Length: 428
Image (cartoon, rainbow, N blue to C red; front, side, top):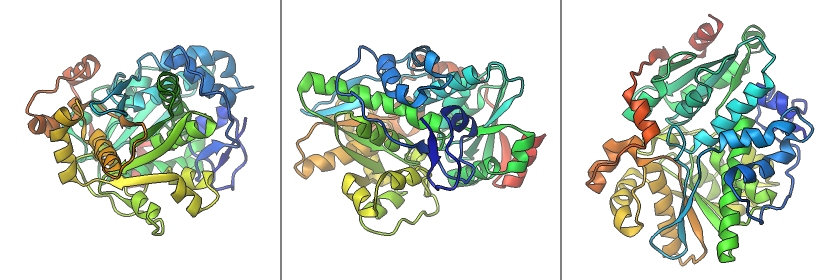
């Protein structure tokens, strides 16, 4: 299968070329030339087995095809359990059981394994530029740490991630460097896109991305949605919908991809924080990115979501997109109240991002929706202990892998929000 740019002004690319490039030459995002429909209703015995089924059409005929099963065993070594919540029909899909306690671990591990396999005979070093609003950078750092042939440069907005997130970005060393940028996530994302589009720089320094703009992040994330939906359908005889906290829209696009491929998903509902470019658009306004607003759910603090291009590409019109996906905006006061009430109301302690989805689910129920829904828990609450613990009145212990990260020293270097400075760093 080939992959095309959302901007329709670049040649079609193979899976190998699309993974290596990160961003299409015209600045667009790679998407499959066609979305295959396969049997995703029949459940698989394990998440790696389902991932192999989901990814097989995309790697067919490539160098990755004979390696796919092995790559999926490596990348999906930690489960993504679907658990019932306190109320009938409510569920939570826990995606925080990986090495950095966030959903981005799955795709980062797959991307690292795939690029490692593709570059086994390449003597050059590939530099991966990562803009992060909190969790992506740590997942990529963990997946690529000390992997020969790779250099990781992480850009994050200084002072706009939680202390534990910042520690998880700077605790690696070796082939990983963290840069605390004097700006917003959108500044970090803009800088990353500018250097990736710099053909002169890329002739000197092989570059790619591991942000959600990368095809290597989009495709693997569809697997856990397909797996959860198939298991739920087999157990209950009903389709499952997902309420997804979203910022840059990568995880939401992966769920849509799984649905289009045939997973028994009845609907997608996207929860945002005060950065509400998507809800305003879905309510009928023109799509208008805006300056980032800092919130408690900082990993969703994205004023100009890159993956909106993929959403628009997959729908014939604005009306079709607005008819297919719904959204709810949640402000900080509601996030606080939802976290505080979640242990008694839902039986879980959520992170601020998961809390946005819980509130969206509560609103669906208040409106009379009786379908089965799963809230997507995108990060472990221990990453945000300064917010969560005072609200729930108890300590939230970090999982072992996160505790190990926190025990190491961390360091990040300052950087101005200027792509010229980043170019100089990359070229050095």
